[in-house]
Length: 264
Image: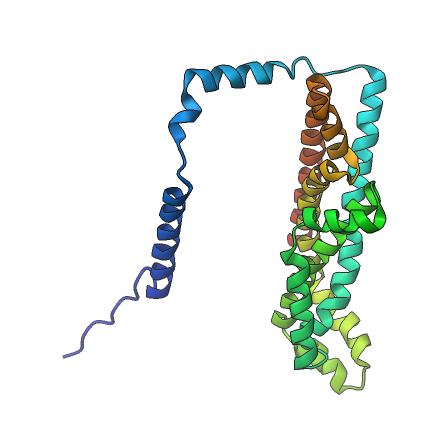
């Protein structure tokens, strides 16, 4: 008598164990942090929040100040774009040894270096580079480039390792030089994926660039810190609105470009 084939479990035991562990960690976090949610909804808390937010209205809309805000937006956009561009170039170069193309030892060393670069947040890199580069957008751009190089280098290396090797191998068997085979066979296969990763990191970098200015790395963040330190809330409101507009525009442009790349 033949038994009907058993149906596979909906959730694998390893996945179930991971979800249980994650739920346990979340519950333990709530217990260890001693979060008192009731304090957020008291009458005094609501009144203080309303009074604080009322100080931001109306935003400062004088033409001289709006020109300064526009200059800060351009500086923030330039920091994010240049930092991402540098990271893209460095990420490609570091991804080749990190994908195992130059041996196991080079792969291990480069993977470790990329992990170190991406493990340190942009804010910490900015604080370190401010000592060498001084205040201004240069340190912020370098901080974005260093951190993003670690992220993109790791993603690019994984893409190189997971791509089908047959086209590149065929060219090399027929006598084509390794670098030529890489540019003509490997790179075209993964270029949409690389550009999608880069555009997504640009979205993240435009947000990070707006925050890095708080430590003196230029852009809108530096303007925001200056006006908040002087309790000029209306000017700070205009800077915050400019941040929201810039992030929304960059997110929209990046999403449209990524859709165009993945649809072909």
